[in-house]
Image 1: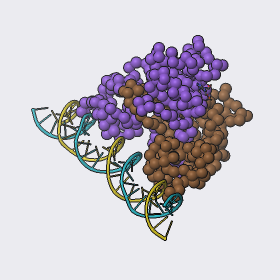
Image 2 (image 1 turned 180 degrees about the vertical axis):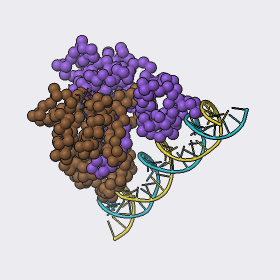
Image 3 (image 1 turned 135 degrees about the vertical axis):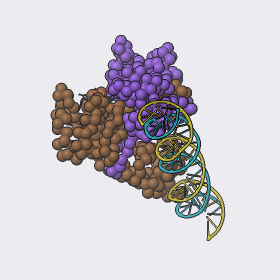
Length: 210
Length: 210
DNA sequence: CCTATTTTGTGAAATGAGTAACAAAAAACT
DNA sequence: AGTTTTTTGTTACTCATTTCACAAAATAGG
Ligand SMILES: NC(=O)c1ccc[n+]([C@@H]2O[C@H](COP(=O)([O-])OP(=O)(O)OC[C@H]3O[C@@H](n4cnc5c(N)ncnc54)[C@H](O)[C@@H]3O)[C@@H](O)[C@H]2O)c1
Ligand SMILES: NC(=O)c1ccc[n+]([C@@H]2O[C@H](COP(=O)([O-])OP(=O)(O)OC[C@H]3O[C@@H](n4cnc5c(N)ncnc54)[C@H](O)[C@@H]3O)[C@@H](O)[C@H]2O)c1
């Protein structure tokens, strides 16, 4: 089993680039087209594909359609992935309003908050009380949650999510969440990202990043 | 020169943990306190410090105050870092409203947009036309920018920022920006982060992440 | 049909980050 | 004062990931 996060991130990038290339009329691509597109070496592309048993044709490159299909299968994009959000604040709102997830096959299907002033049961994406999370998540068999609550509430919200059967979380709260080893937790820490840019600028550094 | 991003991220984490430990009354800490706090091994902590010439006392650990000071110096947090934002949409708004940057010594001091309906020159954080970016950035000698505009506009906004003298960027647009090697570009790609959680959940994987 | 060229796929080498190990220093104890 | 314990700082090692390199396959061209 592949545990290398950057490798999976690259697969997503290949896939996104392939959609663009297809829109430009490409029917086949070579490893160096994809390499250019996402900023890695051609050998990296071939190695990644090889890890997942994706093969092309010697001298013929890869069929764009087939490749997109294979990547989508690997990435679990064959069916729409349903996601819940906790916390309808600045970040929660931004996510709910974002149109881009839909075309990626990601559907935010509810938001949960403690502030009753925010409840809106009949909205396109309903905003519900925390207490309803369990039934909602279990009925819909949702596996993915986003944590966009204040740091102080984040751990308790995570615990609640796990109790509901959530298996993976994208966390915006700037602290380390404790979770069992079989739970996936990806953190987006914007302060840290900015602080990091600041460091490298101050030291005249250069980075290529993810 | 240190080019390892995760190493710098860890320095930020040590620093944040130290503030918490100090608030709890700690005067000195050992490498394993910090290791626990951010979830790495003690030897990693010492290695990181050693890379930056930070030393403690054998059997005495590290003075919390001194350590915070040294980390802040390394991370360039001695003076408030001024930042501009391009794009007052969902993300731009979330960032502008966020209170947490201030206590990190990060100050968003203006936002630039093309939509004249959004201009608000007299707000606490002014929202200005794109055309005013150059004067503003040059006068204030700002080095850091955030790109929160639609993907299609992102490259041109980056180019404009670079022309103004910006040296480092945090980019939210889901595409690869082209920039000279001496420019720092950190990307926050939320679709990719979610897609990645989805992948690891679907494959029953486990990750520890950043 | 044979040769030259291109491009893949993979095993080997290089790089780089993280972990372990341990000597040296400092403190604590007797 | 000397011995034991603790903890650092650094060197050596391990492991993972990336890069290289090249044989084998496929295509194109003569
Ligand atoms: N806004 C940003 O730009 C930004 C930047 C960096 C980090 N963050 C982090 O992202 C997270 C969200 O930030 P934000 O600005 O959107 O916060 P916010 O304060 O705007 O919104 C938080 C929301 O969570 C709700 N909430 C509080 N406790 C809850 C609970 N126990 N269960 C469910 N909902 C609860 C609140 O009612 C509110 O709607 C925070 O942890 C913050 O530190 C945000
Ligand atoms: N909102 C999200 O949750 C989310 C999720 C994933 C990715 N993103 C990405 O983040 C970026 C911002 O997303 P958003 O939802 O805030 O977008 P948005 O559409 O809400 O806002 C974009 C803002 O940029 C302004 N703008 C457009 N062109 C401009 C230009 N050339 N110069 C300056 N300003 C310009 C618009 O007037 C608008 O105010 C996009 O690239 C988007 O793909 C957002």
